[in-house]
Amino acid sequence: TQLLEQSPQFLSIQEGENLTVYCNSSSVFSSLQWYRQEPGEGPVLLVTVVTGGEVKKLKRLTFQFGDARKDSSLHITAAQPGDTGLYLCAGATGNQFYFGTGTSLTVIP
Amino acid sequence: SQTIHQWPATLVQPVGSPLSLECTVEGTSNPNLYWYRQAAGRGLQLLFYSVGIGQISSEVPQNLSASRPQDRQFILSSKKLLLSDSGFYLCAWSPGTPLHFGNGTRLTVT
Image (tube, rainbow over all chains, first blue to last red; front, side, top):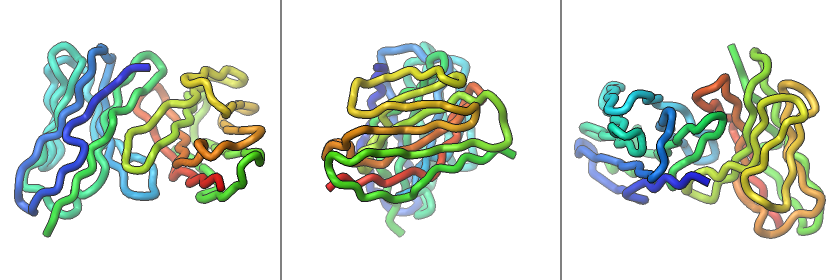
């Protein structure tokens, strides 16, 4: 089993603040995905990063894949209440996808 | 477009009873299929994955089994449920990458 650790586990911030979530592993992955999950629903894909050092932007969200393809970060600028949810990273190795421990984000209006 | 169906949405079962959760995918052929389990507010644990009919790989030894009787059908089963089998079960499919999830089944074993 490939272990991915996310930090922080819980995050509660005021609307308009910035935040960064980290996803770390000792394993190398062929790609890494970030998902967001609402209560009672399945995770929904936000982004896939493939190349070491790659940076992708999705509106106020910035995703970075580490140079060694072992870690990743998600940065949210000017968080909004609609960003509230569980954020999950997932590393792909062959046909297997291993998920991080999750970061529960609450953005307070 | 591809869609994934998972049912039931919620299930309450007594300890020792059998389990069968079904997942089907539409709009694609020969998908990779996955079963995950999730504890409340936490990450997903990979239980089983399949790259083709009758091909099942198990990640974690447990009280559960999986089968893929048809190309786009994936079934999670148990002969006798344990209290520890309670959780949120998610089916997913993938053309390679990334994963596309169903809406999950909330299983409570009493």
